[in-house]
Figure 1 (spheres, one colour):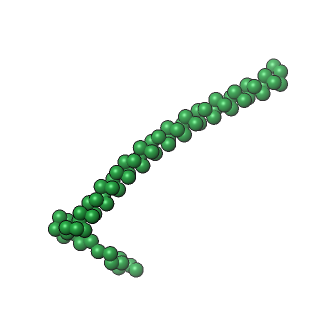
Figure 2 (cartoon, rainbow, N blue to C red):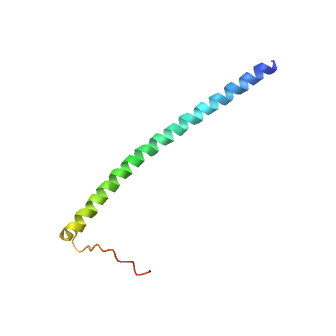
Figure 3 (cartoon, rainbow, N blue to C red):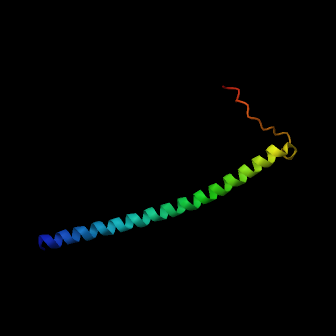
Length: 73
């Protein structure tokens, strides 16, 4: 095999590995995006619930929401 053929095979091998790596990274990013969307939705629901509790403490039972510092400060 000539030097150029070896170089071509090396380049093709590197490209194949890079394509595989890109596919794996794309899969990870897609999963992370779905998780981020889900977490944002959960945060919105929690913020909404917190607002409801702050407006009407009777809904939360004995839960009292204050902005006081915790005792360890």
